[in-house]
Length: 136
Figure 1 (cartoon, rainbow, N blue to C red):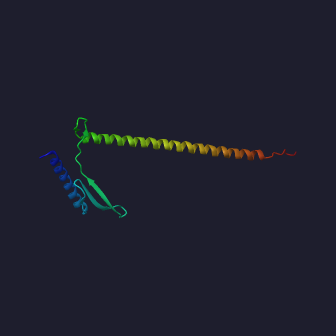
Figure 2: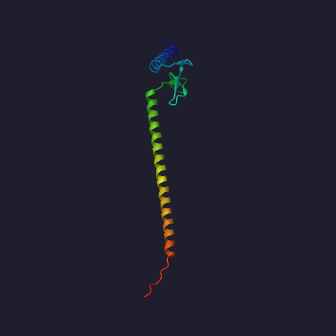
Figure 3: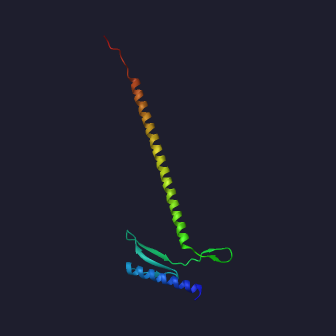
């Protein structure tokens, strides 16, 4: 068999397996829309009709500059994805921490300003008080 035939055979086996599994578990149609894709009608949580598109591909790899491909390494790609995802989560956590620190700082500044305004108001009230000497 040629490489293309082997890949088509493998792709078709996976498409068939996925299709049979979905039809058995969810009792829904699985509609082939191309040689490597199938569309599945479903409902979201609100009962709206949506479509799930499942694609099965056999990646070639990356071009090596010599007219060929370096083989695809799913383990390396998965590890890169894991690291990228962790980095994004860390950046998001740092941004949220920074945001919360700014909110706290701004809140403290507002409270200090409010306290100063209250103190000035009380000071003005104290200045208005007239002390009269006690008659003896």
